[in-house]
Amino acid sequence: MRTETKSAFPWGEFLKSLAVIGIPVAVQNVLTTTASMVDTMMVAPLGENSVGALGLCAQFSSLMFSCYWGFVGGGMLFFAQYWGSGEDDGIDRSYGMTWVCMMAVATVFGLLAALSPQLVMRLYTDKTAIREIGVEYLKIVGFAYPLQVCSMAMSALLRATERVRIPMIASVASVAVNIFLNWVFIFGRLGAPAMGIRGAALATTIAAAVNVAAIYLMAYIKGYPYLFHIRAHFRWTRGHAGNFFRKCLPIIINELFLGIGNMVINVTLGRQPEAVINGLAVFRTLEGLIVGFFAGFSSASSVLVGKCVGAGELDTAYERAKRLVYLCSGILFAVGLCIIGLRGPILTAMGLEGASYDAGVRFLVIYVFVALIRMGNWIMNDTYRASGDAVTGTVTEIVAMYTLVVPGVLIAGFVLHLPYWAIFLCCYVDEPIRYVLMQIHLYSGRWVRPVTTLGVQALPAFREKRRRRTV
Image (tube, rainbow, N blue to C red; front, side, top):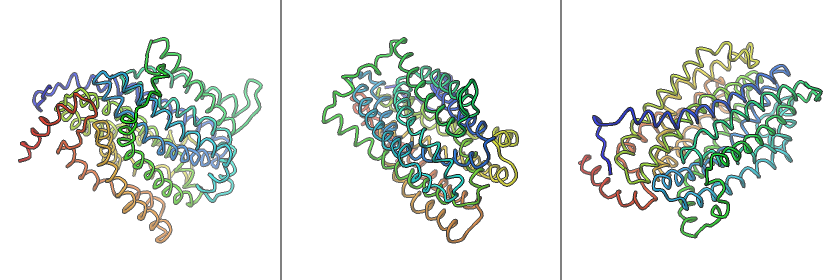
């Protein structure tokens, strides 16, 4: 087992590994979000209500994301650690369980969108004009949800096993198709009928199918084995399945309760004036750009730390985790400042003006400055999960959400009737408190909890070393 002190930490190798994994994933996520930005920009000529409807439909997709992301987080825990220890059978079984659980979630949300879009839109807003436009979009885009989630499951496996270029290239193809078909279907080019908002939904669905097909095709050409071990994916044992769900359950609960809490927040903001709703819709797209960029480095953190834990290199994992928190938060803050600097042309191009523009600017400025702490919490939580500790981040996040954030937003919106920006600010009141608690846990090293044989064997020596340093 290799021990790395602060003075001997191999920064060159570390930054190279972070870049090799993080940058392609960041590019992939940014491309996906760029497609959402292009959707918004191309829908903008249809009116601000179309922009607002598109944003609220995206919030329903975000709720689906919260429901399946627990399985992604749990799956990557096993993928990365088994990858580090070279246990192919463990990777195969873990992927099979992850894929099945994620597709079950996608099917439920796809059916809700396609068959009950009125119910979904009534939940998110009381503005009839926005609601009717959203219904037309959901009826079609519901068919894209299973395809999007399938590609997400495959991408998680590829990232954890350090094959990040395949999902990145597939995203490039998908985004290109999406942008082209938006032009064709929204405005009726090349002989196609002008479908408006429904054209954007159709383009998204076809692009999702292209993404799945491109990943499979490139994986086959490159000889990547794990996606094609179909029988092994379902060769589950009671012990492995039990261990999988025990590790996933806290993450699933975390993401589900966060999704519900965020839905309450969005429902509250969805009762604000239409200009605020439209500004919020554009902000959420830009937020996705920031988060998407950051998620690339978060995924890299999970792989770099989880792989070391699985291989029994626990001191290396500990030293990497400490540096990743501050490095990734700094990178994210710099990206956010760049977007603030370009806010004028970006928000205008996305169809905002007047009161909607002012609302978008306020949302963006507030978010960027709280994101420095918020993303520090995120990177610590993802690092803990990849190392086997799925409980600490879950408990602190859920308790903070339901004791501080949700009550604060509801009181600010429905009791005190505060301005929309004050309601939005209440969404982040818990972040500084959680940051302190998560930092204490980070330096304790108690989040290192291996699931592989090599990791478990190295654990007693690691814990003894941490105990001696705290005495």
